[in-house]
Image (cartoon, rainbow, N blue to C red; front, side, top):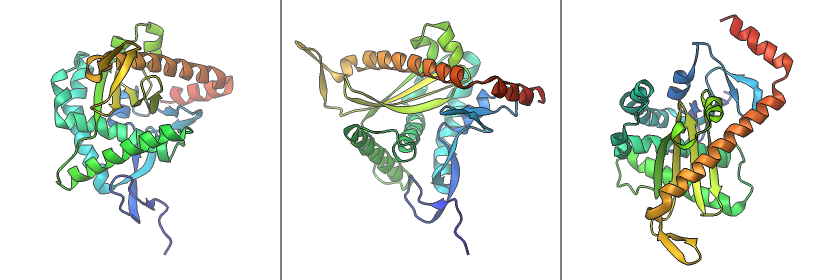
Length: 271
């Protein structure tokens, strides 16, 4: 009997020779709420010629781990996201809830895992080793949670912004509206490993750090990380989101041939 091509090792629980499900890196809840029509198609960021019916998927998790994460996703959608989409207001009371923290961390982990082991994003070995360490700590945390064992929460801080809170340029905001993306970023100036994701007008930033670490703001003045980290992360996120939007615009301008535009128009004219 031939081995199923979707059989492998679960990225989270690490069970081997197990059936894997096609998992979204950015959860499906974001794609379904981004659609302009039921048959809307998405396009891969690295290849706009590739249409995606339901967003990018990877064979990553087994059924049990997929269902484990879906519990956080359901709470996030019901208790936070749908209310935000109606009111355009952030319910910051949710930010400290464990289900919310776990949801944001689960998305950051999937993006981090994919960048490390599928996308081949890291060329700097020292930078890669930092993300490997935090990916491992997050994976261990979720496994202890799954198995009801004592947990050690990874050293990280989550920041959630409305995109118009950190970006003032209307053209950038307009460009980002239909976009969904996530990636890892290592800030060399402050030595911070960061995972950024964007969808539905929201920017999620997970910053991994040593809670006891301090850094130098100027040669003469040292600040505890808690004092100025939030300001630094806001500035880094603003810069990164703008650069990502400009990069996407450049890619589309260079690759959107008249023939491809005609094919896209014909597809949507049939809907």
